[in-house]
Length: 269
Image (cartoon, rainbow, N blue to C red; front, side, top):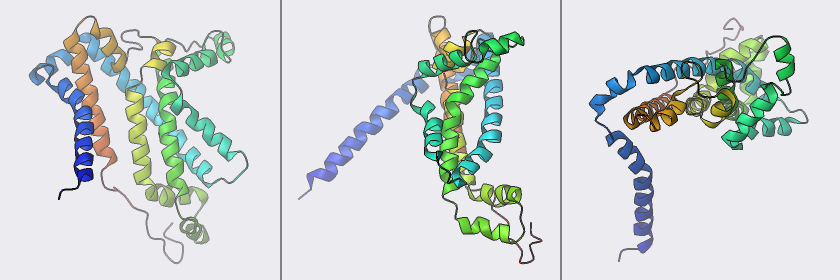
């Protein structure tokens, strides 16, 4: 006699997979794929690609360059107030994009917390490419930081202490032991951050606007092209879909490096 529950679970799984796959299949089949090069080579789309690549590259350099050592410090810290700091870091994850954009405006806008000070020095941030970078960094950094902190926190303290006992400096412990051990978790966190940043829409629109060749990123170009050229909007959507898939593949690659084995004399460092 066939039990009903396995069949029910299989049916529910099929419904869930079909629901998730249907929009993707529809997007990929909405236009002939042979038309993609032509649609993606229009001036408006090319400008959006350039703005997106440049802004996300700078944002990712900031996220990785500042976020990685900051996450390591927070993961190893046991000071009071650490929980509050972690909550503050994670707060942008649950903020509606519009609220994130308004928050950036109230911080860096003309009448914002720092806006007057910056304006007095001739620095205007809103509706510039700098605003795009800040918006992407603000919404994407928490994804990387949360994953990096969790990964660094799982490292065994005796592994790090062994390197210190052999004479390694704290910087050497960080970049030759902790980083390789945490590489997989960091790569997964970066993938989430990159995907979130590449798809950022609401905060960028409110804080940076949608100025062609200046602040119009690919997600904003999708919105702009909807009323002008639906096929171009679909083509940009397929491009972003392919980029997201590539990021997921990269995040699942096997480890590319491993920590060196310290020598007994400490010369391995």
